[in-house]
Image 1 (cartoon, rainbow, N blue to C red):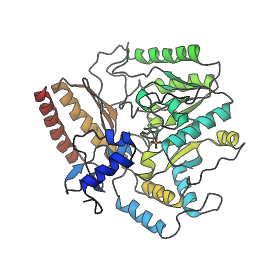
Image 2 (image 1 turned 120 degrees about the vertical axis):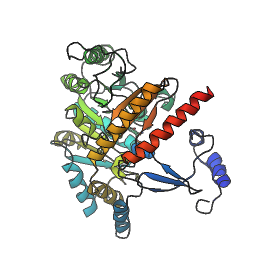
Image 3 (image 1 turned 135 degrees about the horizontal axis):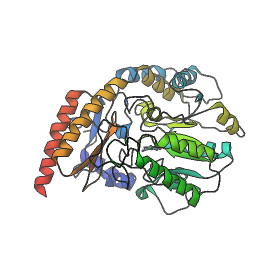
Length: 421
Ligand code: PMP
């Protein structure tokens, strides 16, 4: 039992007292009762061990209950849990100095929040206050949060209620080089390209031109002459690890700035080294956003998030008080510092992720049901062409031996599935 509770008792509570959607989304006929975690491993209440390739939606960055992070929390818990930011306390300042050192100039001013939705809410507000404009653009298929403001920005119908969410949010065509009308091999920044024929001409990415053309059409059709901002996940997370043509962001950022808008990178899933080559997903595209939002991996599973911006935008935003009780909480800051002290192993993330994608591409060639394998580092998508996209976003401490174990299980699972059809 988990803390003295039987499985039946747990399910009765789940069905009666917990958000009913939670009971619906288990993806399993028999739910998994998770009891304990360590690094890339989870154990259920029967003592069965699982290799965790989802990390609570790309959230457990350095490993479940990482000993160094756990030790830092224990130390802070005995000292101070909370005051507000109006008092000066070391953990907050130590953390902000560390986080700022991981961001390029002039992205140095930090606002700590508690969730990704809250961070994106704040970024939307900042973009509007700073520019004096209202309209915000993002991609179809994006996920930026479930609050009433960010729900307007999110572009997946299953997460939308029929109410007035944030107005002024417009969704442009997602430059998806696998499923979209244009694209193909060589278009995206991934060790594995699509098997789809490429429409590039002499190294020039035609898909990029077409999708940028769509962004221009979105401006022309749906927004006034000036815009407040453009949100982009460097690799779409909830949308299924969707990747764009390599130069899309560079050109899109330029167009948005010409329209008076600021550029916001939603690094909630892609930040903290997940893409392997860089600490932030935007760095892989050679662009510099005006605002960066982050959550999930920032706290390795502890609820915390942040918005980072430039001194100029922060000055515009200082026209009113912005207060957040738990943003900058001492325990959260101790967790954040410990995560950064662990030094996320970019090289491992890149090496293991590349190996995993290369091997998955072999399974794609073998099984009809796998349409595409894509991603970067440990932000990986496997598109099942008659089913939903399968996402792989493990703790970044996994090894190639773990990958071999997964590949054998995955191959067998597909065989079993196909045999049943
Ligand atoms: N942005 C992205 C890219 C996300 O994936 C998510 C959560 N899945 C959010 C924002 C919202 O974060 P939270 O659930 O912490 O509010």
